[in-house]
Length: 559
Image 1: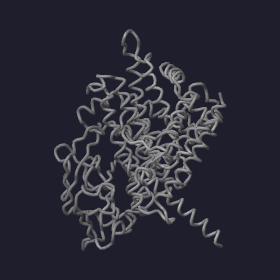
Image 2: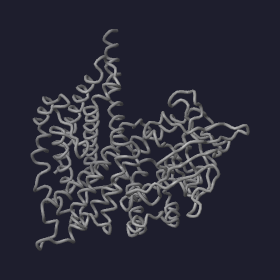
Image 3: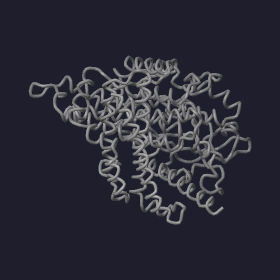
Image 4: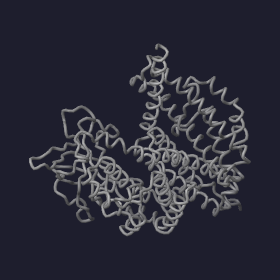
């Protein structure tokens, strides 16, 4: 049994060598003079982004191999774990040598990358060949699906008693307070009830990563990932309520003055203050350098804000806006941006935005309901003098960038939860629904879907945890966090889509919860960095590192 773990480690190593070969080939396309050329990166987006997907796929293989090693060390690597490993590795190894899907209609293949010879050599690697030939096979998928139907699940232990207890606590809470009501709330397009938010606050949802001295739990990003995953397994809204608190807590904890920390962090941690992130503008999207909203210092030291923001989640019910605005119109791009902690009055149905100088209109959405989305207009909205984050003007973009790692890890964790939600619904339906006198689970095409959902969700989960652990160690993990978010979003969408297919026509009916999960899954490829932006960031980071390493090597040779 354990020989599959050794083969997994060997296959992951071979995948890493292939990834490096792809990196070298793509670097040659976009950095012909040694330095990455932005124009060429744009022109060659298919292969550049394809490289990012190959890197993410490889990282998932490595993280999953590590999971298997840990499970074995804990005495938890049994037959169901072996099957998950074989199916996941078999599929991803086959993708690497034939084509990695970037979306439903886009696949990056070795020929486009200029790595046909290297891909052919990879198929000859003994460990790779074993997984391709004996990993993701019909019989293995059937066995795995049968065990899943009996209630078996691949090991999810974290090697930490506290974190395992956190998972158990939030799984129980979600099963009791979220899952039974989520679809009704979604169909009514209702805000998640205040009493549920209060219960989540009691559990510490809003202060997972806030230091204990400020009333938080003082845990890390791995704990935050587990909490987000379990809540999202019931409803993505529940898993997302803590996102804005996570962003605000990290912004203030890392950059705030002592006074700002003492005032805001305890209130955020206890849930009496609900933050909202106010970054996106109508015509800028992911291009933060083009932010136009202006903040002007007034004679009394306060700030006047004028401009427009859009896609602002939970804006009406929020008490605090973390708002980025341009304070220096003469400074180019990011340099003129500052971050503000803007207090606001919590709205209600009668007056959603009662403050002077602030108005909002709801954006109706397919899914991701429960908090509501808004377009906001600022016309002389006032921010107190002490609202400038850290008291530092012109640092807004840098301050925000430092939160991206945590935000993308948390989004990946939400995607993992959504994928599990889709799996849970598909398995329950397939076991209860009969066709031609047999449960749907007896049909190979249905069993195949269930097996692949579970195997790929395990791989994505482990990549997410890998990024979270790196963040908790204090290591830079922007690339790893981006990979986790990129892959998890695709996994969630594929799982939801396949779960609808398992439901057949009923999956298209609003009364069935899987219709909600499909809508919720779709947003994951868009927010917190669209898949295309994410792939761009991953590839640019890796290719720039390659260029730097080559330059350093050349200088050493010349010396």
